Amino acid sequence: MDKIVNIKIGGLRDEQVISLLEEHHEDMLSHSPPESVHALDISALEQPNVTFWSLWIGQDLVGIAALKELDKYHGEIKSMRTSTHFLRKGIARKMLEHLILQASARSYKKLSLETGTMDAFLPAQKLYQQCGFQVCKPFGSYQEDPYSMFMSKNIS
Image (cartoon, rainbow, N blue to C red; front, side):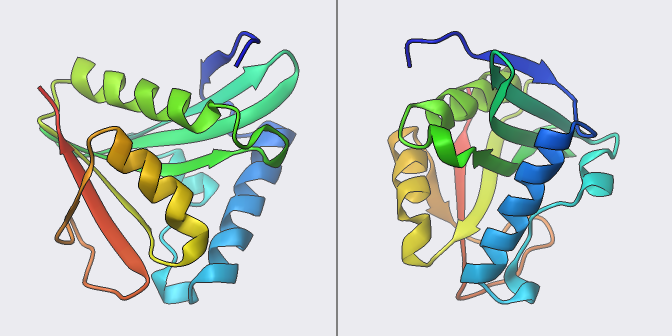
């Protein structure tokens, strides 16, 4: 990615952010039944234990991501999404690297995530694996689900 990506904390009420969150939720529903979709809505993303970031190139929203604190030592990646026009340009990796750095700065010992098992999720699964995440058992309040893959990474 040649252009400067500006990572901003918050911005959940920006129209572009709302649109991308809606697109994210609709896409999740197109691949998994509603009970297997764990994307957070705006009110859940505004909770005190969640930090939300938006990524921008100029005035263009290129991605979003959130980090939820499960406990003092364990964080969960939520709502990570790249804008359609910026797919395959390194935005997701930049977001993921930012979240890993944030988890480390917060002294988390573990960073986990839930992603889908359908073919549409293969690029995300590959990225997570490249960044050191490994398949794990459900964590937090998650249950075994054929539509969900759980992954975690120890943070040093």
